[in-house]
Amino acid sequence: RYLERFHRLALRLWPAKPLKASLADVYFMLGRGLYNEGEIGQAITTLNKALKLKQSPQVYLQLAEIHFWRAQYDRAVKRFTHAHRRLKGGSAWRAYWELRTAPLIARARGRFAAQLRQKARLASDTPTRIQLQRAAKTEEASATLLRTRALHVGKLLIANFRNNKLRAEILVHIGWIFWQIGRHRLAVQSFNAALDEAPNRASTYVDVISFLVMRGYFDEALDAYHRALARPEISEYLKAYCTFWILDLGRRAKVDPDRLVLAEVFLKHLKGRQWFHQLARFIRGDVSYQALSPRAQTKGQRAELDFYHSMRLVRQGKVAAARKLWRRIVDSEMMAFFEYKMVRRYLERGVPSKPEKPKRK
Image (cartoon, rainbow, N blue to C red; front, side, top):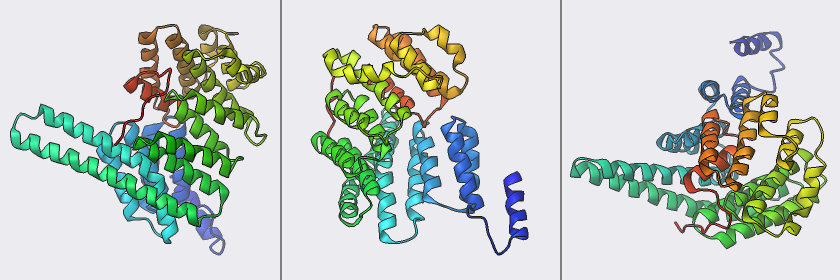
């Protein structure tokens, strides 16, 4: 209400100089911030306010992500569909959003199909069972068609866009789609091309390394990690979390310790007061979980500490105890955190110590 009153007042006081950020934009940014803090209920309310004022693809995408992580796959698909119908602007803008949403909506359709098949198995009458089975096949076919079209769109965008950072983002999305259809080699090539295209784009390193680590691809993740360490533009903060992930997978996979030397050296230099420096002390073994727990002041900090403690438990063979922590992280709804996404995958598929074999779609 305060925001609405402020915007109305600003419009009266400065009619010739409207605020740069519309009320819809402000609600979206606020909703995004609440999402990042794990306040999902408030985020949904705020994002819906933004939608009433302006039906932008960013808002639909954010709501779709929330529905996806809450396993509301049918609602996620509907949100994506609404976003596509309301896209405005030139063909390049539409194509960009079509590609950007494709990996997640294809996963949502696949998960929705699985839910329909499960309902079909439990159906008590034949007509209902057949109807559910057909619906599941339709969702799977739609996901396949979506991926095929997205790859075509991605190639067109790469051929026509000149902005290096945008091209890198496109290549990452293409890589994710290749992975979904079981083309592992092409996916890794696309990830590497993204790193080559814009070596100073920090989010590419984080996206690629986290993606590969949670699937057990140590060699490929380590290569991207070494490239990140060499870039002065990449913040110490991002390098630290990439270091945590590389060390966890490397130790779990029992790789030659010499291959972890650079990560170990970087870890030793994290001795400040910031939270990620305190996490580094825990990962080094300088402070115990019990001693650090009281210093975790926010929901996000508690989720992170639980995650890195759980991965230590996995290496100790205490998987049941680790899974309890993973479920607590899921309950925190810190959906914006990479650790949250890792936990969701580990709960479904287990923790890999070697490369997973991609399933062909």
